[in-house]
Image 1: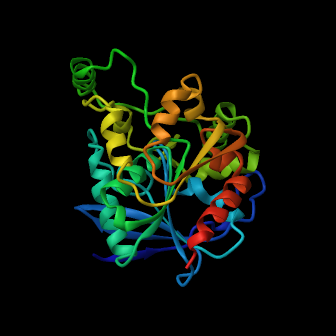
Image 2 (image 1 turned 120 degrees about the horizontal axis):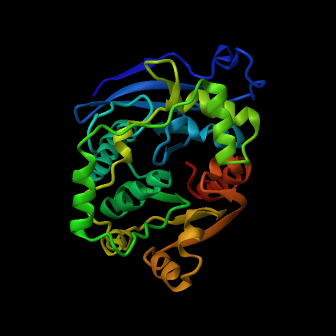
Length: 315
């Protein structure tokens, strides 16, 4: 597998043209990696001789989402964060996606960047869904696992096989589209409307790094619109839990006070405990005053908790 370096990110020139004053960010570089017939973009922060940690982003997101957490880390880490297929700078398929491909893509990436020994996996949302199952499928490859604001989905009662297949089939009739915005500033304003906890500077950074200019010059999320099409298969939590029961790594559940886990499971404490009970060694920490994107809302808290956990095996 070949890795081709790209120019460093966080160039101050990217934050010009009337945008809010740029925050001081730790620099990252980008690499292109061949993964199962696709080209992945992988973002890397920190010195190559530091302990390595993999950060896996969520749905409708990309690797720059972790910039604020990386900025808040106290010690040196070699941080490796891919853009999943169909997100950011990685190859977009232009048709429906199959979720198990993410497990296989992760295995290739780990073989490339950490061919020997177990690794530290930190996943947010969809990234946590991938990391949690993978840690059960390949327990010998994961030394520590962090799942950020994800503990499985809670499908609606009507989501049986005919319902899901019909919904997926109907969606194939026309290519899906994402909302667009007049420019990066308009996109940043939209991000702050959706998440009032974002500062103007952080919203501007995200608009410029997780967004992209479309062919007509308008700005949209840097995500393949086909991710908006639901899977044709029913999500079965029992299958996921069977994988979680195979996880051997110490596991940190990092929930957001106002995030998805609390929204979905706070009214069902028995189900919450049933899911947590799948993990042999699990601890739970809730980040106060944070929504689902806790890496944006409280990056300093997230970084501190991550380091306290990861430093138990930082070699």
